[in-house]
Structures are given as structure tokens and as C-alpha cells.
Amino acid sequence: MIDIFVHAWEKNKDALANWFRQTNQNELSYEKILKSLLEIVINPFTGEKWNVNNIHIIDDGDYQGCQIFIVPKDTYQPSPYQYLTTYQYYGSCSGCDLLEGIRGYSDKLPSEEQVKEYMLLALHLLQRCKYFIQYDTVDWSSFRREVAKDILPAMINWHRTNEAGANLLISKEEAVKLAIEYANELIKQLKQE
Image 1 (cartoon, one colour):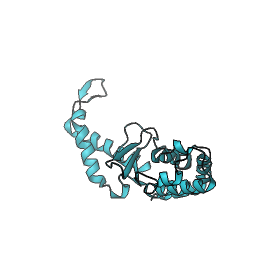
Image 2 (tube, one colour):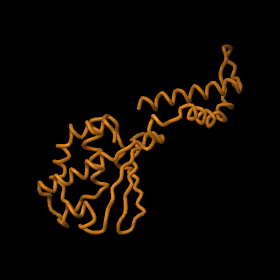
Image 3 (cartoon, helix red, strand yellow):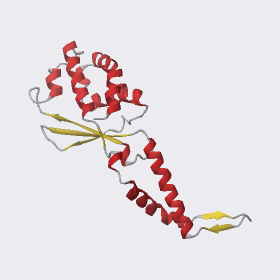
Image 4 (cartoon, one colour):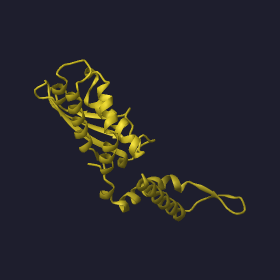
């Protein structure tokens, strides 16, 4: 569970309950509930923007199973540290599927009791949220080495201009130094996010 998400829940849960009150039950899916949870509860409170239009779903079940949701941050080419995961089990009927059980095959607006049950479902999705890779489990030295190694070939062919205005190919030592500086800057940016 992500602590700041819990605080977001406490602050914005009433807005989510109002959304459930105004949404026909036949429009609800686990993905749509997660999307609304992120849009209404999480994104406004945390300042982070999770890309709700790019939710990846892994579902290897058939008539029952588990949907695993992977949500990237709304940024250009998210790194592995900028993904969120959560999951929900499902079944094939109202007796074994939580969403179908709450809905009762109704296509109308939910009752207050149903709103409470949808809120509990949303809370469970939130409680299962985890970052795909936790910052505290990252070996930053290895990360720095891998980033530097990946960009070094491109930097070896870089040119620089000296004081006299001549365009010179940088040395391998300068390229290594620049690659490490770049990796350090990238780590600093990732830790700030």
C-alpha cells in the first residue's frame, strides 16, 4: 500500500462516492473503477499524474481469474520506477464475482448500499497498489553503471568546440565522464519523482 494514496482516499473518497451515484451500473468494470479511482482520488491529491488512458491489463483467466493492472505515469517513456500495479480477482457470475455481486445485473443507478460496496471494492484496489519497482530496492550503483554503459557508444562520437572554435572529437575519458554525469542526473530526477 502506498501511504500518500491512503491520505488521498481520506480527502477525496466523497467525490468518488458521488461518481458512483451518478454512474449506471452496467457501465462499471474493474478497469473503469480503477481509472476513476486514479482520476478522482489519487491524481488530484498527489500531484502525480497516472496515465489512465494507458492502463495495461494482464488477464490469463478464462471464466474466472485475476486481472493485473499496470498503470504508467503520464510522462514520456516512463522508466520502470514510474509504473503502478494493482489487481482484482473475478468470477463468472454474481455468486463468485464481486462486481457482478454488487451490481446484481442492474443497469440502473446504484442504491446507497451498492455505493458503499463499490467504495469498498475501490478501496481494495487502492490498498493493493504498489509501485512496479520500489525506490528502496533499487541498486543505484548498478543502475548508474548500466545507464552509462548504454549511452557511452553514442557519446564517444560527440564533438566539442574548444576555446579557439575548433570542432574536436571528445576523448574516450571525457565520454565516460559525461556518461556518468548523465546517469547521476537521471538518478537525481528519478528520486525527485
